[in-house]
Image 1 (spheres, rainbow, N blue to C red):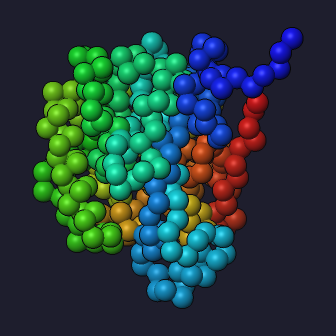
Image 2 (image 1 turned 90 degrees about the vertical axis):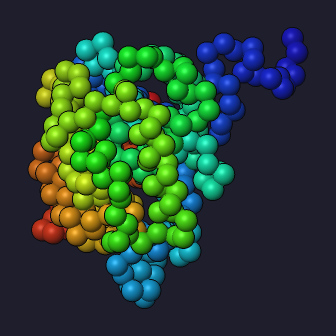
Length: 308
Ligand SMILES: [Zn+2]
């Protein structure tokens, strides 16, 4: 019997991921009868300043020290979710896609494949908003051709309207970002116009799968709420970031209406704490599954125990 090291282990094991990754990139769970899969699109390295755009340098430094986040650049986790309910397969957000400025993100394609999900399986896509780290995955070469011709892409009407003439006056972004965000959103709208199904405030996509507009981060920013058999989970999109529990009042540089975004964040966190439901958010550490606790005005993130 030989014990040689196999240099191509996956080739001989059908069903194994084609990429030999040292970290897990997907996590599955059930919310009642609804199947949920959190998939990591990778991480985005961004200036730390963006997590605390309205803090002065000393205050920002203190917050980052307290949370053990690096002072200059910080990796933002980037998660998407696949939901299966009532015979529909729904992708919530699409990651960053291929972007030379974001080399550690844009991994959704091979990670979906590794999870056994073909692009042609998707019946619906929900975009929580049209920033490029949420829609870029649909703009990767060859993706559109592999999607079903009857794919429905759900977005708030206010989001579609906003990107026709976006307002960046209250955002704090590195140079080049507003232009890149605007052109990416407009390209997305051009490419996928015929697939778009807009809603005003709320829309039920499948049994127990409801998308609800919150506004704040962008005018059409939305969250996806799952409810089945007494279980609940909310995918909060960009309503909450790594610093959002300890400092919900800190503005994020990507927020187009930061005051409203902070109100949305506090309202949502308070509700999550009250209902005790699970929270998943785009930019919390993978698999980003946990609960929200609150004492007075102070929120706390309570990560869920992994169920192996
Ligand atoms: Zn984002």
